[in-house]
Length: 391
Ligand SMILES: Cc1cc2nc3c(=O)[nH]c(=O)nc-3n(C[C@H](O)[C@H](O)[C@H](O)COP(=O)(O)OP(=O)(O)OC[C@H]3O[C@@H](n4cnc5c(N)ncnc54)[C@H](O)[C@@H]3O)c2cc1C
Image (cartoon, rainbow, N blue to C red):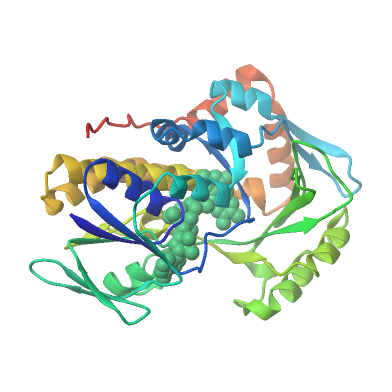
């Protein structure tokens, strides 16, 4: 089958790879002119890690990854108020827990798609379903026909908008904003340590990268950001929301002034009653974004891509049966992950000083292996057996 895949992030190339393994003809479309570089760091474990193993990608991912050792939470003076030993967490997962740039993961997945056509700088702008296929309009004006179209174009998916309707219908706002950017040459460095300062409703964290850059992550409750500020007002809005936090925050905000590439967005989940319609299917954040609070969006995106390709293979051309099997196999698993993400909102942006204290006590307790085993293991565990689909 010829399958058009909109989006070369995490879900898109994973699907293309597995469709290729099963003898189909995927074609990838990406609206950015090139694969992105830089960006934020992700923690990567569980089913995503297992699929990367099945794709033979783990050695190259491990070359680019960080094995973070500590998560330190500090007060306004930089004194430690809570600490988590991440080596304990890694031990619970038998070492299969790494951190790396999302863009490095996407590049590795795309690198596995050798020979699969990929068109950059264009996107699918029109979709017309017919009895025998889908007529697709590309942003460069061309028209092509495919057997299936898959939207893997992220949280603000255009494919979803074209086929299922406006985003607002499916968006569950999580009452937070997030910003991420990289500062070159920031003077404070704590290698392999995620250092953060939290006050009620706000958190600022930093990680030193090996190229001399420091990755900064800011999370705050929506009430601290007025409206949905336009792109050119992002820095101003962040200064207003975080400016009076103390610690290193003034220095970090000064560093931000020289940065062009700032990721800034509302934190949202996507909930759809069904992930497919006729010959169109959605994947990853487009279908069921769990939000950054889940910490496992890449793993879910890869799992959905792997299972969709496998079910299409199993159904031997009967895409209606395959889409239904894909949805049925993953829905309760993905919904449970989305629910769990809600629990982590207080970790990033607790509402009150008391909630912050509780968080700090809980985090420190998790460094004790028996506590970690009891409380963390269940959140990290993926309650799904990944099927084997034979090519
Ligand atoms: C700050 C932050 C921290 C996070 N931390 C983690 C973490 O620790 N662990 C984790 O597993 N996950 C984390 N996530 C979530 C994770 O990044 C996503 O869940 C994951 O990238 C989803 O993959 P995807 O392929 O569905 O979408 P994306 O990775 O967003 O890829 C979508 C692709 O589609 C392209 N695109 C967009 N629109 C169009 C269009 N109209 N036409 C064509 N192409 C288009 C985009 O350019 C992009 O390349 C985090 C997210 C954020 C924002």
